[in-house]
Image 1: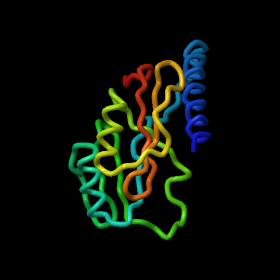
Image 2: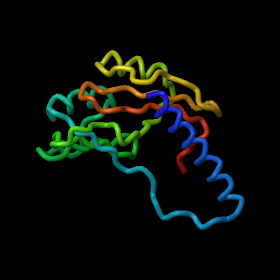
Image 3: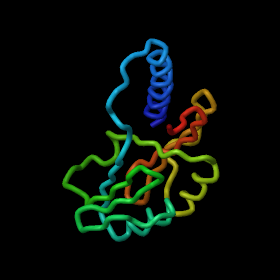
Image 4: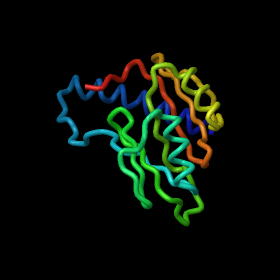
Length: 150
């Protein structure tokens, strides 16, 4: 798991370097608008709705038997009923930004999340970690003083 975290940190730092180089070269900007939705599969939708409402401090803005969506500061967290896939959370890693990583990680642990990889600094003041939610999904948490929404 630490190798996943280190690989993610390398990708983050590489993206920063590439974006600075692209700005210097006046490379045409991508039309990709950025992260919009991260969706997790859960065994029990009602239990997951309750947990994520507490974890993120907001209620869903859309709720159906097939999909539940939360607006998290302009980004969407989606919950879906579990599929038949035996693999859960090992192929996607999304980081949710926070201003105080220590406080937020402690709060999520109190709500039932478990540390997967401990908080670590990866350069430039960026600190991140991963937790497993009570449903087995990987939840990335990041403090990134370099990234600023435009």
